[in-house]
Image (tube, rainbow, N blue to C red; front, top):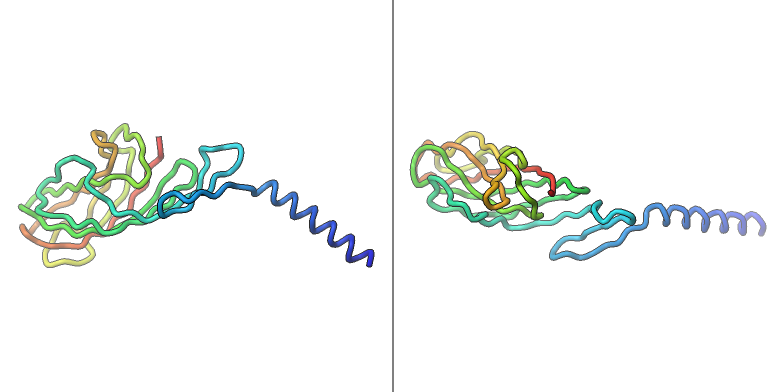
Length: 165
């Protein structure tokens, strides 16, 4: 009986200590869960899925864009994510697509957002690789590539990362 009682007390003590160390608040924000750790409202862990939209800047050499869903995760003030979209070119040459961010941030220069992407399928060559940069005008991001075939429809996969400011 003493062994069981001592084990029970030890277990309660360990549980209480671990609970104090790992306590956090969980908020449901839209379609994502947000974990906020005590002592620092700035340190959050959250993730979600969103459908990007144009950030407000005009796309370049783009006839149409079908923004598919993207996923993202935030740990502290760092956000990383990835997504896909379908793009139809309106002319040969440079292609620029502007997208909004899943977690709002102040974008101070084009290097504030980084990433890459590439064509995953399509009827024409819409650039083999894309770069992802920050859109300082609308606090978003842009993807830049090359369209070698006008009116080509291509699916593009991309990834991105930025720090919430």
